[in-house]
Image (cartoon, rainbow, N blue to C red; front, side, top):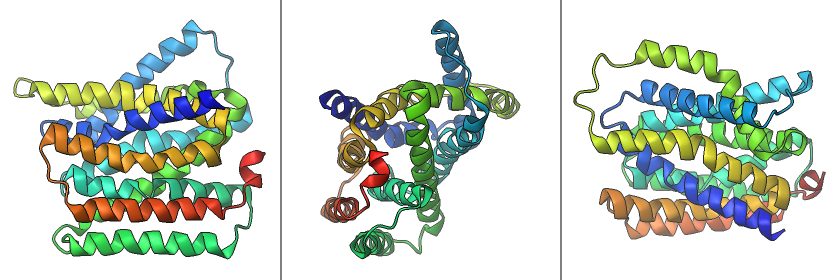
Length: 290
């Protein structure tokens, strides 16, 4: 459906600004506080939306998947990327995002119990090798922590996307992220207050803007479009729009942060995108059809 592609595209475009905004925010905010604050702010907005639209509570069978979504995309991915961006540049980290569609598809295959053709795993291994080779050539030894944190973030996000996409068929697109945010709100709000700095006097305006973006757009609005797009157009089709995210992110990093985008970064992003597209082509489409 055209509406599914449009919603998915808007979601990817919003997510592309997450890493640059996080990079700006961690300049003045502690990564742990930033992660908790963004989730708490988005959780309060989510609560208001659920109350305003009188949404029905999730069933008991939905609680565990919602916990997985909350741990992966509400806490895991934001925290891991915030920590990673203390060690690597935004442009460097965005290359890893090229593996996100593959991670989502892999968890989707595992969760659905399907058996993709061998070519799927060949493309998967080639894409992973390209990312590992790029990290090594760009100074993996100088910052192994940042690269490993980014890999962990991609794994967590892929799992969260797969679980959220499955839930969106029962709960609805925007409801999934809202319930996940609300489920984690008591923890995120309490810990955000506990880790809040004593003073914000030296916090810069760009850091505040970065916090606002990742709280409202990356944590909530982007997921509204993204999960709606997955529900309308299908995970296999709309999920491929994630291949555009590294290119949007690289452009934003260069435009807004003045970071250098080398031809190697662009080449690896394009090669990884090709591998992910090939892997998705050979994945068992019946899982998504259900």
